[in-house]
Length: 165
Figure 1: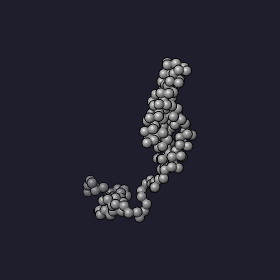
Figure 2: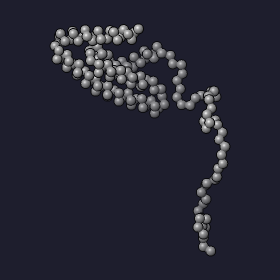
Figure 3: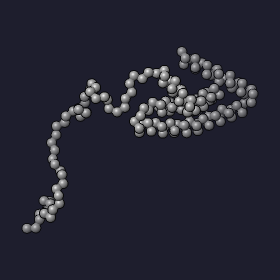
Figure 4: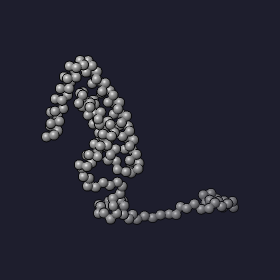
């Protein structure tokens, strides 16, 4: 139901704002503002997206929880979609999502509403019941070996060629 209301109310709000702004400043300035916000928004989304991608890479390198950088990336992606949609209300929401402080607060609010049952990186806990796969950890593989340690060098022939007789 909330999604239906959003699809119903957002176009109504946009049309009302277009009429109000257009009657105040005229048609061409209104269209120029819409195009300008789309171009500016695209540039901002690109720069913010590169920063978020760098933070995501950093969290993977540190093996830390990547949830927050992923959420920031998703919000930046949503901001890009909103900024490319013509309208003043969607542009305002898109620009708001490009503010890092707002994204952090939005993430904290969503995080307080969501309960994560488990989060795990790396191999599972020791002693946990896991299906066993051939060749996986814990399996015994039988095999033969030969010692290939190099012998110390001497003046004797190597065995590959015949020495002096």
